[in-house]
Amino acid sequence: MNRVYNFSAGPSMLPVPVLERAASELMCYGDSGMSVMEMSHRSPVYEKIIADAEAKLRELMNIPDNYKVLFLQGGASTQFAAVPLNLIGRTGKADYIVSGQFSGKAYKEAQKMGYDVKCIATSKDTNFDRIPVVTKDMISPDASYVHVCFNNTIYGTKYSYIPDTGDIPLVADMSSCIISEPVDVTKFGVIYAGAQKNMAPAGVTLVIVREDLLEYGDPKMPSMLDWKLMAENGSMYNTPPCYSIYMAGLVYEWILGLGGLDTMKEMNEKKAKLLYDYLDNQDYYIAPVQKDSRSIMNVTFVTGVEEIDKKFPKEAAAAGLVNLKGHRSVGGMRASIYNAMPYEGVEALVEFMKKFAAENPKA
Ligand SMILES: *Cc1c(COP(=O)(O)O)cnc(C)c1O
Image 1 (spheres, rainbow, N blue to C red):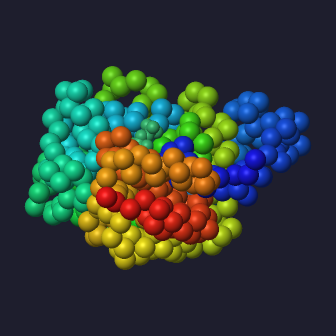
Image 2: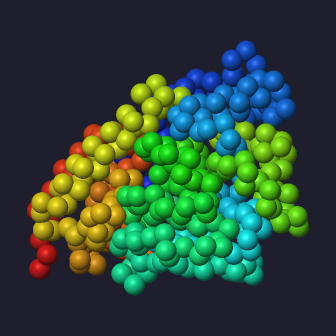
Image 3: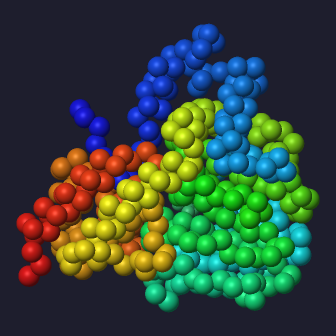
């Protein structure tokens, strides 16, 4: 069977050269005599794999030395709890910007734990069709941190700016936009991301944290959520998600080989432009996201007719374009066009959209 164009929001496509490399090393990694899945995380051969993955990520994202890179477990959702547990000790309070479901979940998780957190801006009133405007005067001067979700996977929105929080650490969930384009790490206190959107198979969660922020952890927090403990142990306090970290390393290497994040950004913008230009120049499909908030990773659109919206992903799948159904909270369609989606995949999608529109007139 041929590979399809997989528009899944996550887990999502991985680059073919990475899968081929992993396949070639599956039975026997180097001269270790075993698969990466079978080796001790304490072995020198694995220690090199995790160190190389970190070094490549540091190079790719230009991560300064005063930031720790952690490879953890539990997904981005576990970090919704870990963020307040590690940081709120700074002042006892925190601010959240709610721009969609995941940032809403992060906010609720902190609330549920009894912390003094405040939602300082939201775009809920317009069903999260935009990124709320955040200005410095909106931020509580005594906040321990300000939490944002940088790319809203479900709604297809992304920050076109980095909120200016002054001296207050900015914490960003970048699960669905990590390593899609260059970002100035120094503007953030913490960046975290589940791997399965743009980085690796599910199982590993990346946390990039500025060293001076490792001093505010709640002493009662579970060890597994403790960034400082994890940093002191080089992400190996317990068994790390070994294979996913290895795969992440291969993905970093693939991007470096293409020319790094500047090239990646160019490629991603070219793909997104093809799709948005088509959407903007026809009147069959509606792109609900406001233009200045558009994501280049997740593109949402609807036809406005429920029956037709239901038919679209089915017919697309039959044509080899799979997982285009929108998230249940939005409906319609969503094309996730992460790093690994080739330009040809988006071309095929646009051609399909044209054909589908012609064949399915709205009454
Ligand atoms: C997918 C996603 C999550 C949830 O990630 P898990 O790894 O499944 O916990 C959180 N935030 C964003 C932005 C996501 O896209």
